[in-house]
Every structure is written in C-alpha cells, then in structure tokens.
Image (cartoon, rainbow over all chains, first blue to last red; front, side, top):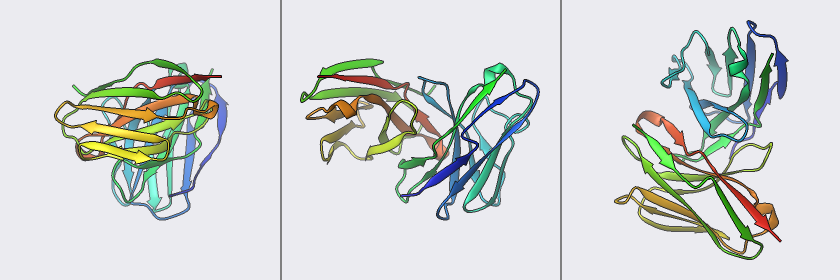
Length: 114
Length: 109
C-alpha cells in the first residue's frame, strides 16, 4: 500500500485566480493520477502524470487549465488555473500498486470557487 | 463511447446480503475494480477481477463475466459501517481509468 498526503485539504478561492494542489507519496511510484469528484458524484480522471514526461490528459481537460508537474517519483502538483465556480470540486491524487487497477487515493482537496 | 452502469441506491438491513451490479462498455479492458467511499473520505480499494469468476475477500466478494461485460460486488453479513458509496471502475486503453457513478448503500438496523 501507499500513504498519500495532499495539501491543502481545502480552500476557498476567488474566480480568476489559480490554486496549486500538492500530492506527496511515501514511496516511489511510476504513475500518479489526478481526479476530480463533485460531491456525491463519480470520479473523473483528469490526467496521468509520469515522472520525466508530459502528463497525459483525458478528453475535456487541457494543460493550460490544469498544468501538472511531476518533478520526482514521490511528488506531483496540479494547478487549477483561472478558476470559475464550475471548478468547485474535490480533487484527488492517486497511485497504483503493483497490480493494475488497484489505486490508493489521497484524502482530497476540497476547492470552492466564489 | 465508454460507460459504466450501476444502480444509484440500494437499501438493506443489518446482517443481510446485498449485490451491487455493474455493466460496462469500454474500448479495451484489463479488469474491473470496486471501491468504497464513505462520506467525506477518499475511495478505498476493495477488490479486482481480471478474469471471469468470483473473488472472495472476507465479507466481500466480486464477480466478473467478461463475455457479458458484467460484474457485481456482493456484501455479506452487512454491518452499519458498510453504509457508503460503492464504485465500479474499469481500466481501458492506456491507463484510462473510468469509474461508474456509484451506488449509495444504506444499511438499516
């Protein structure tokens, strides 16, 4: 298993600003994932972040809006840029174990945009 | 397109057995997973099926039929703490994970 921490745990931001969310893992992992989850809704994959390469974004998500950094094997950041109220959501990072499809999730960052 | 379908809500009584179904349509398939998420918490991994058949982990079992694009999660001896949302998830091509919309399970005394 992996222990994942995220910062901040929650934030309230003004529209038009940007927020960077940090994800720290207690072990080295190849792939990290960023998800968005509206309260009471499903998880939607934003992008996959591999160390040393550009993140791979899912349909509907673009790098200009959600730039991701992956400087090493234990850390990643997701920036939500030029925020609008529609970006209000919970943002989660996750990593996989050695077995496909087994993911460990961070506690999430609850973002409210006013 | 890619999609997963699961019931939105299920209610059961303590000690009972409940089955949560999941049907999927994806381009490329590596396996079906199940996650539990309590209100305000992060999803936690429950089980994974890559091959047809039943996988048992304590009170929880999961089943997969690849030919039917269908799976289910079976929860036995329900406890109040099992009240949570349950998500099925498949991995499509290129580590593209897709989650169902979740089934909210309410366990009543």
